[in-house]
Length: 356
Ligand SMILES: Cc1cc2nc3c(=O)[nH]c(=O)nc-3n(C[C@H](O)[C@H](O)[C@H](O)COP(=O)(O)OP(=O)(O)OC[C@H]3O[C@@H](n4cnc5c(N)ncnc54)[C@H](O)[C@@H]3O)c2cc1C
Ligand code: SF4
Image 1 (cartoon, rainbow, N blue to C red):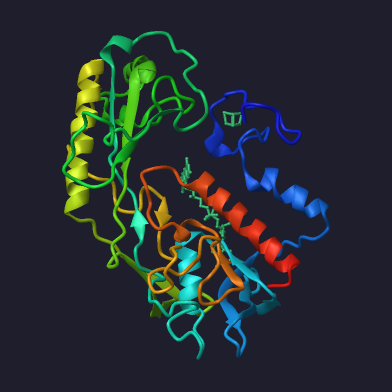
Image 2 (tube, rainbow, N blue to C red):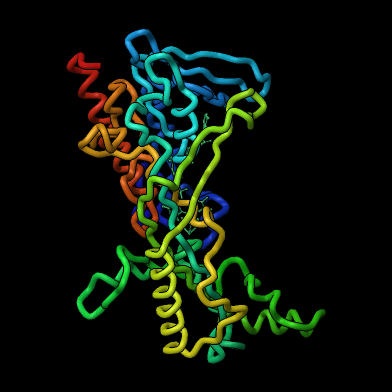
């Protein structure tokens, strides 16, 4: 937050957001939404409740959820007129696919067989190094907010930038400069030990950079989450199984990512450390999963309408990244929040007019 908000002070740029913000200057629903909802007296939070399935009646509509108490393992139910699912892309998909019944044999609201398909997780390169011109310079306060306070948005759609693939990538710069984390991951590449090694690490501290391009993966039907009845969790509920492959489009994009990184580093006079051109991080590293319960206008090709409401089960809303029709190359959370907000505004109106 750049300004005091809801009684919390503005960010003081200590850089330690990854450990949680002591002053709640970083937006987080636990600080900025739930306390205000609790004050209304209309919210009950049931924690340690691991949802397994959404329950449905003979009319095919949802009428509650089945969950297990995490401490005792006891099976419980909560009854509801409307169910809003927000267990993040993978687990929401798992819950929906496990919610089978005679009216929904392929998973809840999955007559289209769309749910679980079109998983889009971004690809990522992880490149690091240092600037010799900054080695040994005094440690400065380069912290900004934690993680990535420098971002290069997608540029390949702009005039003068040709490409032989669809979509694009943006670039995050983590741990660049004298970051709060002190010794950089690249320190392990420095030879030696003892006082001399410490001295060398300290000298490199203000000089370190990390460049992480995040690229969009197209929505492919074969990239899929299913549930595997042969593998269950400790409550006996089937676990998800993920099948994910990138294609030619993503390989071409990776080449362009590598060209771009090399161009930036060369122009800035940097030295790459442990560089392996085009070697993507393990699939799933971007932790930006989308697409497995996508929204759209055609119920044959999508599971939700534009209010995140199921086409086939009108009293179920799915409000996480699974609702996105594609991943883009961007960080998704504020868009997830905005769409969830829009969905629940719509839900409140529908309840008021007696439609739900
Ligand atoms: C290390 C890391 C860094 C990230 N950095 C960024 C970033 O800088 N910017 C950005 O935009 N995004 C970032 N993301 C992605 C971001 O965290 C997600 O996009 C976002 O949290 C998704 O929100 P969500 O509400 O869908 O899911 P979540 O925030 O994961 O919330 C889902 C909730 O559902 C609960 N849940 C799951 N299954 C069940 C169940 N069966 N029963 C009951 N409860 C259940 C979970 O405990 C969790 O509380 C990052 C992710 C990671 C892991
Ligand atoms: S930099 Fe991060 S942890 Fe520090 S005050 Fe700002 S939001 Fe909070």
